[in-house]
Length: 150
Image 1: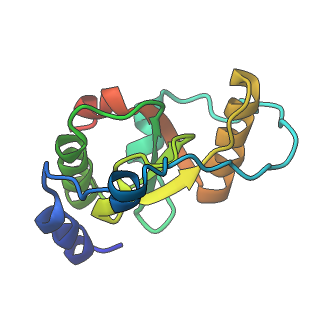
Image 2: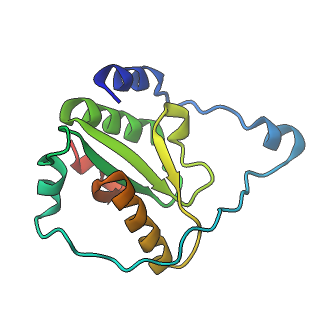
């Protein structure tokens, strides 16, 4: 995504959430089962530099990918979305949301969201590692650490 795309994301960020009409009218929950992925992968330790170096000093077209782990609904998803969109514009970082939740809250703002299947901590870690290699993610941080990206 280019800066114009992230500016469009910024214009759509709002603390107001759309109503889930199915849940309101029919009482239907948002429960979805995650699809199975490949078996757990061994974690590789190919990077020896500190995480900040891996994020800002990439040689792949000047774009770095930042994994943002969302393990629980955020109290203020709009604020975190603003911080991530600002980082995308200022630093050339593309955030990729990694979550096991059926709705992370970032979908409505236009962020790339990768769903991880539920499983043990080791399995989820392996799925994150697989997506990290696929997207060439420099580092993965928890959503609560987004403040530190600035």
